Image (cartoon, rainbow, N blue to C red; front, side, top):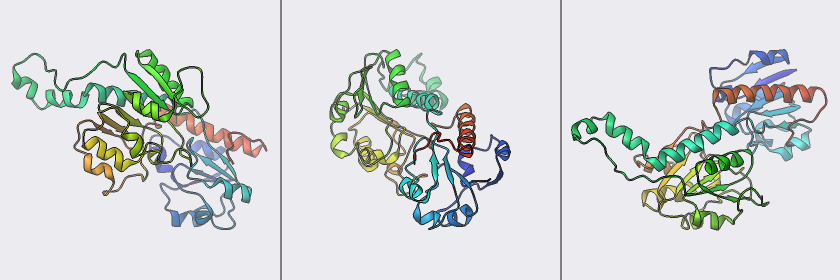
Amino acid sequence: MKICFLDAGTLGDDLSLDSFSELGEVITYFSTSPDEVLSRAQGADVLIVNKVKLNRATLGKNPTARLICLAATGYDNVDTVFCREKGIGVCNVVGYSTDAVTQLTLSMALSLMTHLPEYDAYVKDGSYTASGVANRLSPVYHEIAGKTWGIAGYGNIGRAVAKVADALGCKVLVYKRTPVTDYPCVSFETLCRESDILSIHLPLNENTRNLLDQKHIKLLKKDAIVINVARGAVTDEAALANALKEGKIGGLGVDVYTTEPFPKEHPYTAILDCKNLCLTPHMAWGGYETRVRLLEEIKENIRSFARGERRSRVD
């Protein structure tokens, strides 16, 4: 069995992939551009990808691969219809990053709510020492207890974030197409109107693309904090940038972007100097323990496929 990592660079440089040699011949590429996929994928039985797009155009008419293993939960970068047509199995990994993404979601919410970077900078730049005053309470910050935390998407991560928000004393509201009984389920419009913190944990599909659009952004409270750790295209990034710049929302935390990395002309480049902005480089999923878990799950998906079983299949 020939196993090919097409974008191993996205998995970090602190973990070894040597153990995959137990399963077959292993070839790794740090990154792969769309026009390199066809030549690199030919002859491989298993393709392991994180962000590389695999479809009719990139794989060609007669791909040799029998299995695609996603180093992720989302699989919007793989054409599953084409794979089904060609008899290619597609596996994702569910639940491996729940704790890590929940941790970053909470970190963003607390940082933006408490204005931590501003207070930190005030001390580090010497302003605190020069002030002669024992404390500073500007910018004003508010307690998170008692606030309404709206959660869009109630999968593994959404549920974990809900529990954390609940533990902090927040009122939790949930937007989910199929209602749950854990917390009140509301429409997306109501979620936008009532949330002090709105965190997004939705997969990207035809129903969620551009869900948080300009119309819904206008429903948000002026001091609402928006956190997107799902997919960039679930939101209207230009509208969000404008809302933050014009003071129509209170804060914005984003770990995911429609184009990654986002280009210089991206809407967020115009707001990089905003103090109530927290941008991270799609790292929420990637804690050390998280990635160890991910690689073990990918190996088990390959073993399962070799045994003729269907494990974690999305095709």
